[in-house]
Length: 249
Image (cartoon, rainbow, N blue to C red; front, side):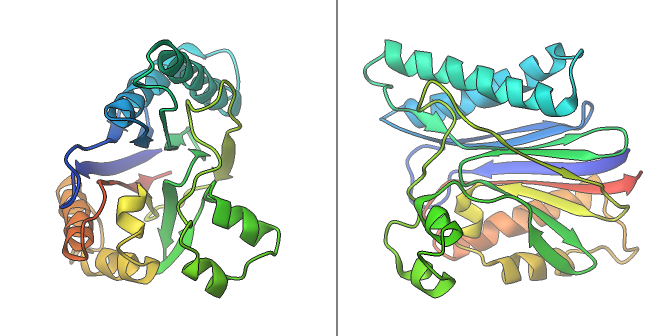
């Protein structure tokens, strides 16, 4: 499988530090967004540990399935971050979201913990591929809330699952069979919290080159446009975006 990609992380307009981190590994077909949280420095340390550790561990797990390899890499990293927090009182309770794309020869595996998201744009439609691990999403899953009530809840961003907060973590894995022309987008909540899915789709459609085929340069421009829109809409949080377009399967 072949693809082109671009990634960017931005501090936004309100925060003093950037606690997001990204990994763009086009050669190995692995992409990751991490949104850290906890303490004065804990968030940026946790997200940095995630983007350093997960790809490294992933390459060592060659004798197991892709699903088991990605799950083990995230869970191993969870242990590293948790122990670091337990050893340093100033970092106690730190953690990070993780959303990743792991391309195989003929398939795609998506890993997710937290509320960073993976989207698919296919034939001018946008689909959220992951489910947020938030208190609101749990209430939606249980039928306690509907979408209208959920939108008004002030605790919409409370996470129920992160990498590093506890000594163990459950990892959601999703499989997908990519098609030529598919655009995959992974991002932190700094994007979708300020730019609606409808507007994300509109920005993507407006950025399509005349030849109807993305290049690394056009994707870099698209990624910048998405971050620019989030900043124009307030930029209250750090913003991270990775875009990948499948060019051959």
